Image (cartoon, rainbow, N blue to C red; front, side, top):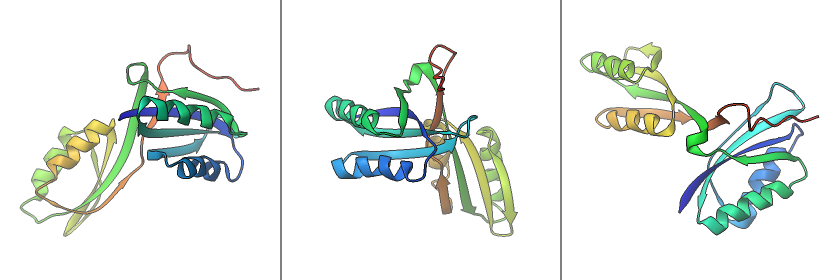
Length: 166
């Protein structure tokens, strides 16, 4: 099983995300993460999908996505040619004795404590998936009350692979 990250430029129409996720569901493909947001041109949405499978399945996913009517462009975001980021917000239960340890760990990972209450903190951490995973592993001894992850968002490096749509 390999992971692949696809970036789609699609028409910003209602139901487009549903049609894309439906394609995965109907064919039994796995979505590890999916993010979507309007681009600089409000007519288009950029969708980033992280999926996994063997080479044949990943090739089929790409072909099936390219056939969808709303899809204007599809490309693979290769790790060495792209930049990936993910945002995680983590609510951690803490005691007064643990507070400084959590603050120090958050600072090491260049995270931000975005909310503090007497018995918990909410931490914001941004980076690639492995950075977020490493941070979460360091919280193993603490009680994570809630966790929200955005999934991967990414762009290719440089200007060679920029897609211009009319």
